[in-house]
Image 1 (cartoon, rainbow, N blue to C red):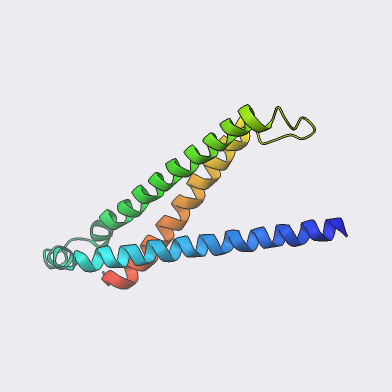
Image 2 (cartoon, rainbow, N blue to C red):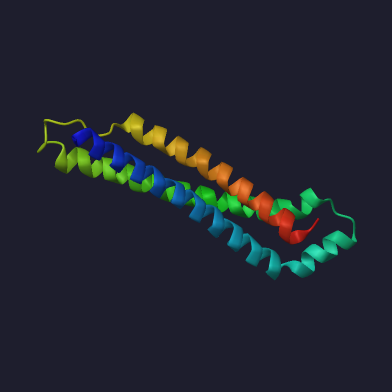
Length: 134
């Protein structure tokens, strides 16, 4: 019975994680559509002078990657701060359990960076291909 509860909690956490990734992709997509709309004159001029589709899309993709890097830095700092608080305050009180280690923090940070980069690049590319029509 206990393991069924753990399986349900794991599945719920996976569903929340998937919903978070989908939400992030939609936010990135919407933000880039707004940015492309606000820069439509510049992109039209670039099209008229014969710029390639990649050179038109690149500033928007880089903007999405920069936002990903800022979010990654914030989340890694928050996770490292949480680890620091747990090591100083909580771990001495609860000696019967293992908390996450610094290796876990850096591994999670690497996963966050990789996943953020992939989601940002895919959302940027698909949105800009559809919206800019280049």
